[in-house]
Amino acid sequence: MAAAPVFESFGDFYARFPHEVHFMGVMFVMVIAYVVGKQHNSLLAKTTMGVMLDLFRQNFARIGDGGADLIIDTPNEYIIYLTGRRHVECVHGTIKMRPRQDLLRTIFSLVSGTSDDYVTFNVTMKQNEYSDGVFAVVPKTSGVAIRNRFFDIQRFTKASNHSALDESLIALTESNELSSAILPLVVDKLNESAKWLNYFIVSDQPTHKPEGLTKEPATKRISLSFKLPQRKSMYEIRPLAEALIACLDGLPTKCHVTPIAKGKIAKAREELYAEYEKKEQEKRAKELQERRQREKKEAEASMSASAQRKLAAKEEKRAQMKRQKVVRQ
Image (tube, rainbow, N blue to C red):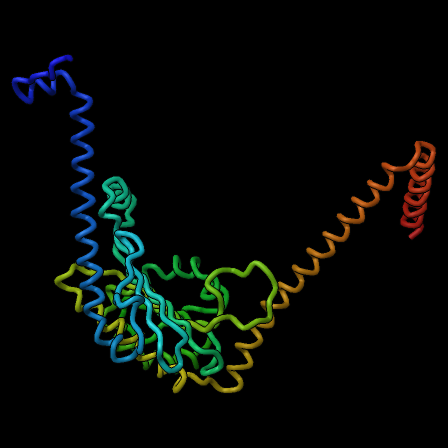
C-alpha cells in the first residue's frame, strides 16, 4: 500500500497542487459569502417586518402562514401575506433584497446598478366599494420609466403637479376628482418618506397589457413599492406602510367621483374594449381566410390533372373579368 504524501509546508503543498488550492479558496470564499449574506438578508427582512408588524396586527386578523409572520421564499426574498379585514380580499407583499448569499450575483447587481433592496405590496380590494380609476404617485426622476412599465398608468393617466406633494414627487392621474379624493388620505405620509418611495398606485386596471378580449372587471388593487434604508434607519419606511393602511378604509369612504367623472372613466374603458374587439374581429377574419385557403389547396390536391386545369382556367377567366370591370370604371 502506497504511503500518504507528506508536505513540509503549505508552500510545498501549493507547489504540487496549485489548481486545487485555488479551487478550495474560491469555494471557501463562496461558502462564507453565502452564510454571511443569508444572515444579513434575514436580519434585514426581520427588521423591515418589525417596523410594520404592529400596524398589521392592528388591522388584519391573519398574518403570515403556519404561525410565521414572514415566509421565506429564497435567501433574498421573503413573502408577507395578510388577510382578514373589511374591504380587503388579501395583501401580498415581498421583501426582495440583493442576493448577498450569491457572490457572483451580488457582484453583477452592483455593477449593473440594480443593487437596492425593495418592498412591494399588492392589495386586492373588494369590488364595487369605491370609484373606478387609475391614480399614482411616483418620483419625478423615475416617472417616465414607471409609466412605460405599467400598462394601466401608461394608458389611462396624465402627469399632474400638486402643491401638496413633496417637490420630488408627481401625481399620475386619470381624473382630477380621483386626485382630490385619494391624495388627502396619503399625501403627508408619502411626503414624509418621499426619498424611499418607488411608486404608490390605486387602479382598477391590469398592470400588463391584456392578451385578449374580456369584459370581466379587472381586480381593484393598491400597489406600494419602496426602497429599504439601512437597518438603523428602517423606521423611516413606516409612514409608507401607514399610507397603505389609510387607504383600506379611506378609499371605500372617500373615493366616490361625480357622475360626469364616472362617465369619462367608463368611456375610457369602453374605448379600450372596442380596440380589442376590433383586433379580435380582424384575427377571426384572418383565421377564416387562412382556413378557406387551406381547404381549397387540399381540395385541389385531391383533383385529377384534368380537373385542376379546368379549375385554373375558370379562375383565370374570373380574374380577367374583374380586371375588365375595373378598367370600365
